[in-house]
Length: 66
Image (cartoon, rainbow, N blue to C red; front, side):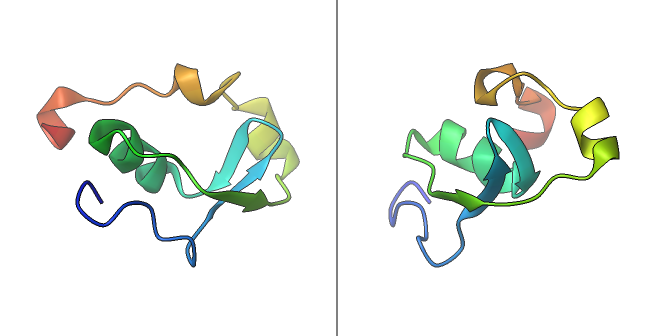
């Protein structure tokens, strides 16, 4: 992702700031320092209840990603 950028053919599905599908792509893009490509998605009531407030609330675990 750092070399080729975010694949616009595989956008992250979001409803507002809630990531519906693509959490790992968000973390990879954040680590690579590239812009995230998004498209509209529809979150379930469970996803909304467990949601973080924004992309900035997603924390990358250095054990898994560094």
